[in-house]
Image (cartoon, rainbow, N blue to C red; front, side, top):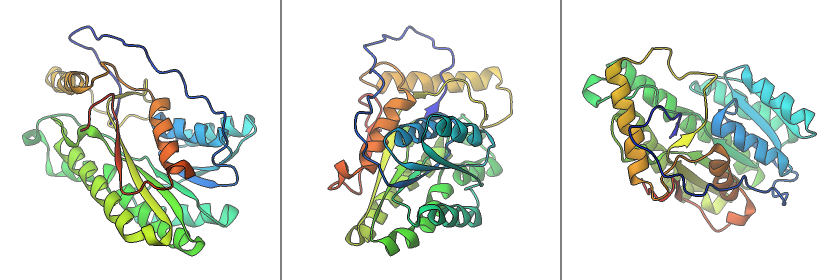
Length: 282
């Protein structure tokens, strides 16, 4: 659940925040990692961290801003490739995985990061079109990309997939989004069950509230009404109330968990959805 904090009705105790993870190891040297939704937020943090640990990162997004991320990484001496595709479309997912595989002849890691709440309101206020849009945004990109990468990982004898879910599977005012992320949790464990014997591990993280700052790519272009601000504030309050650590997380804290699950350090972990939410289990 990567959200930007709005106004808060009550002061929040800021307990000691975690320092930015130190990258003293190179867990991804020689590996090719595909990261979707890499133009901003958690996806950008994952791309930067994996590049710093030696991966050739393939940055997938439909926004041209992903090319800026690529250029930053190249300027820092890392290997990075940007692919402009829309992973809400199956044919684009197939195209992206084929292009990524052609770069080094393999795909070792896939991080499915595309998704996110578009609207926030009680379920009765969603239209049919909005419900479909939420599912298309937060379930199908992960489903399509997993399907598209499997032939490549099966041919090479293994790989690691990390899906980005959300603790919003137990929350208010985002029923379609929550349903989509519940689907991500289900496909994660089912894929792990099906493909563990072929060397493919499939895990997920479930972020809680994550402060990604001002979005350069808004999820919708509609201005919030006063009522919608109230509904949004309710999810902010709930997020902070249920977290043991009374604050939002950072993209780097989410990236640290994703990198662990993607790495060989997690070689005996599969089919798990790990909450990264300050104590909220979702």
